[in-house]
Image (cartoon, rainbow, N blue to C red; front, side):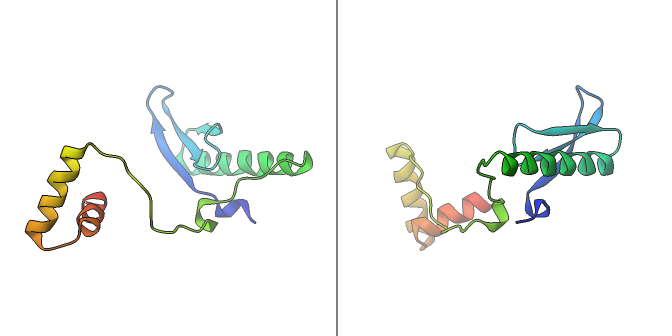
Length: 107
């Protein structure tokens, strides 16, 4: 597994006045820099160092999100009145509740 497979993001941190590099699999880590490129380079190095340290200490290293298997299913609890409203909308549109919910989630 390569640290290149992790999910990185660079965004602006207005409170710091710099770009911040983040890694979804390591939410406690970040790297501030003047440019987005430097923030990405910095967070990648911090993650690489953390993974090396975890391996050295025999700790479990997080699996990259891109390498995980997703079934396409998850459960969501909603109030009964919302369930009824969505079921009605699906029936009126002639589609399944599953298809309606999927469309709303991707909109």
